[in-house]
Length: 354
Image 1: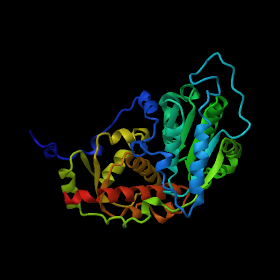
Image 2: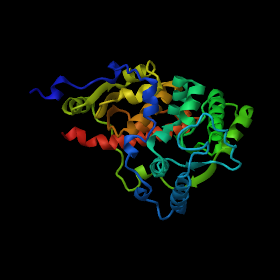
Image 3: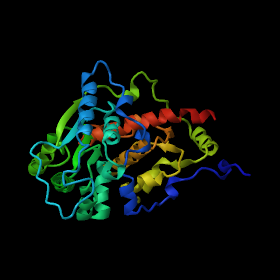
Image 4: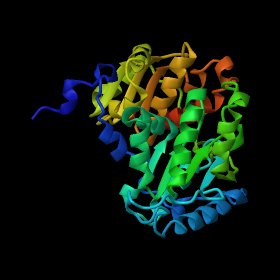
């Protein structure tokens, strides 16, 4: 029987996935990287008491969601009277720097909440807005309105349209008794700063903030705590050889992949990597513009969620984004992408010795 690797690596650029709306809903669970995390597997930094406090607060929050749904039970009752709007925040908002374990804690909250998976939803902010785009606003409210908990990872507001959309959606869900939990590197009242005229949408931003109790988590990026420096990029020949030697690997020219991402909706980037064991890239260089950079951020998130190593030649990942980008309104997204790609590059290092 022929070795599957003999056929050569796949190319992400050759893939054009189609993702039905029902898959978007079914996949609103913690990603594979966080499937087995729990509160007791979180390793708080002894020098950062806010990390231990977060575990205590979130454990209590999860336990408090064990009762019946605020609209009258676990399953939606269309004939039930509308639940009263909560007078206190019915949500928690984890604010902190990169790599302090916010997503680990958010996924642990999802797992600890005593409700069947069909009554809990977990997704990034981008995945949530993509869901609205696929289902429509009213259908999204119907789909999520009977849930016990909605977890939103990487909560960021990039434009006024998202501000109004998410403000309206979360208000409707809170009215129906859905508890909220979110992570971000920006406090709720500061969302949108540096991206657009946030003052013009102050009412929406303040409305979002009112749904959450902020919970600050201090600490340094665990991805670089006590770990060796990220490996330097390899040569084109080393990357290509590793791609051919690794079953299930993909091999793409970096500029070509960036062009392909512009033709694939970001909601499909997860499907783009289905079945891929490692992503091999040649000719990595600085990203040419902000639109391309933001698409790369989404791809980096999906690769990180799925624990797919990234082996690359060209420039180091910390040189992907220009100084102007790193100092602009999306800098937090870019630093997160650099941190995650660096971790995946470290994971990929053993591939060159196969």
